[in-house]
Image (tube, rainbow, N blue to C red):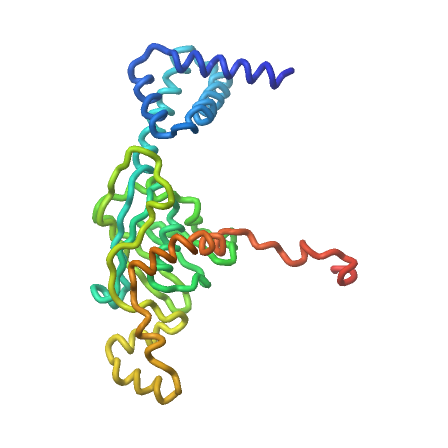
Amino acid sequence: MFRDTLDAFIDQLVSNTLAYDDQELQLNISKLKKGLGNDFEFFFQHIIRFQTAHGIMADLTDQEYIKGIMTLLSHQVHDLKVLNGIYTFRVDLVGHENSCWREIAIPGSMSLADLGYMIQMAFGATGEHLFDISYRGETFICDSQDQYESFDEPYAADVQIGLLKLRKNSHLDMTYDYGENWQFKIKVTGVHTVRRLTKDTDMAFGEGAGMNIWEDDHYDFDRYAYEPKAVSKEFEKNGWDISDFTDNVYDKDECNSDLLENFYNFKTGYEACEPNFFDEVEEDDFGPLN
């Protein structure tokens, strides 16, 4: 009975607010309807429930209640605008700027960790190591073992790109694999607003150049870039085929195909919680677990 009464009360407040005679309120409602489409009704009801609970606790007047709704809507319209953006980045491998770089496009609604996954895919990384991205003095971390709770830094998968207030020429930095210490400079080259919420298909790799990174072998990668003949001779002496490393260069079409096929496998590998082994076994399997 209580829940039915509460739902009916909220539904009535939703109807009254949608019909409220205020030009600014109606303009923001219209913008959110266009941006959210079928999700608008659920989203707007959530705002009404939030403001109603606040109104009861703070004993708001009708005018204060509506003013609060208008403030919430204006914030959401702003967030919707930046989340609708398509952000393009130029990513350079530190130490090999202008010779090893990639161009990436990603929706603002996706996370900072998603950008990190794309950078790894673009440079041929296997996604087996910790990485972080820094912006304006703050570091956002992501760990392939999903053990980020043991770190003090905020989790990169919880941060949407569009809410970072990035602008053209903004700079970020990324570190992949703390042992090998692959460093990337990330520069925003463009921010483009679209009318509707974007889909993941708006992710894309653009132009680029240079070899893919040599996983777990930053030292020889750097040496080959500056002393290709000497390193080639060493590889030949050890019975290794240098072409297995040096022919692995950036291919835009191949990367975009890989993005469509494997991005969510990559993402899941980082973000899916891995069960604790001892939480999965029964005592009868191995005897007392003490």
